Amino acid sequence: MTKTLACVSPIDGSVFATRPTQDRAEVEAILDRVRLGQKAWARRPLRERIDLVRAGIAVLGAMNDEVTVELAHMMGRPVRYKGEFGGVDERTQYMASIAAKSLEPAVVERSDAFHRHLTREPHGVVFVVAPWNYPYLTAINTIVPALIAGNAVVIKHATQTLLVGERIVRAFREAGMPRDVFVNLFLDHQTTEALIAAGRFDFINFTGSVNGGKAIERAAAGTFTPLGLELGGKDPGYVAEDADLDWAVSVLMDAAMYNSGQCCCGIERIYVHENLFDEFVERAVAWTHRLKLGNPLDPQTTLGPMASARFASEVRAQTGEAIAAGATPLVDRQRFPEDDGGTYVMPQVLVNVDHSMRVMMEESFGPVVGIMKVSGDDEAIALMNDSRYGLTVSLWTSDPDGAGRIGAAVATGTVFQNRADYLDPALCWTGCKDTGRGGTLGAIGFLNLTRPKSYHLRQKA
Image (cartoon, rainbow, N blue to C red; front, side, top):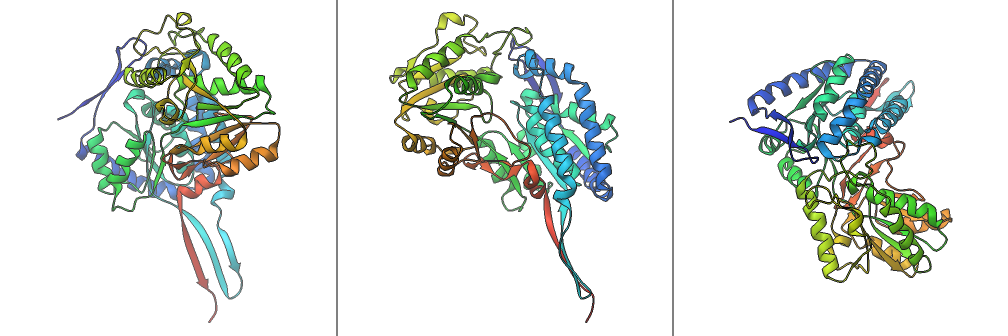
């Protein structure tokens, strides 16, 4: 029986878009065609593949005004931020620029006696299971290098951002991408897991919750399908004694509240040196009071609704539990009358928090941040490591050697100094612990989306 996927808009609870799910037989036929299409695509010269991918991204960019409004309707990001195309284009152009070097054969020997070298072969059919919070950026991290490397790509997007995969594929087809090389599917969880368990994909990239990652791993068990998993996060910021306070407040609070706190590498907990603590907190609250919560279609809105009432409920629950356990909320409820108990959630800054509280330990993924006083680097390191997640850490200090020393002691995927909530396409986007495995972008992104193939060719007896 066909099911219907429905995107419920967080703006007003109305159904913004629906699509029927595709049944197993229909999808199997599509995947058979994609597997054949991938063979022809991989035979194309690298330069042709790069040019077609760049052309697809250019067409997508021309749709940005429509995309920005769609995103506001689907997941609540204010239109004033103009969508995600700036980052999409930056990542695409960088990956295109390093493709030839990243994918070139590694020659070990080329003599009269032997030709020995390594090549990078595409996996085949890459399955991208994309999230709703940055639906274009996270998907592009895999789509672009996978296609450039000669893979075919199948994308399944989160129901909350139902139209995104469809729109990306349409842009690429308008640019000339072969129909059976890049396809979008509308699948329920049961069909998705059945296809994975049947070994229908050669590489799977999933961005989402820890439980979602576990479901992917269970489904893939025994298939030997390689996986890339970016899962939960509870990213910390540390403000050392020599930090530039204005700079630290501005960046860390933006990283905590942007996108209503729904950022994979958003800042969810902040540790501040005791000598700066009171002033940091005062400025952080003042910064937060300047936010404007409201309808994301209003250009004046800086903080839109959370993507769903369920996510908003979790943020309110964590915040309420912390307050009941002794935390002090510092943001005035009267300043944010738009908080309606539904998807519109006021921002909150909490002090007198500790690691017995879920708001400091579990992923909140909303506009709330806890701030703790620390005596120095050693205490900050211990607290930052006291987490089952490890995506990024943001260190605020004028000493790069000190940042390097602290960063080396923290279990994380990326160390920032005087920066936060940014993905550098020249580096590898990766994590550790319950944040997941693998990595996207940079040269390592190409390595993860290909497999090595060795040639040992003897020329003479």
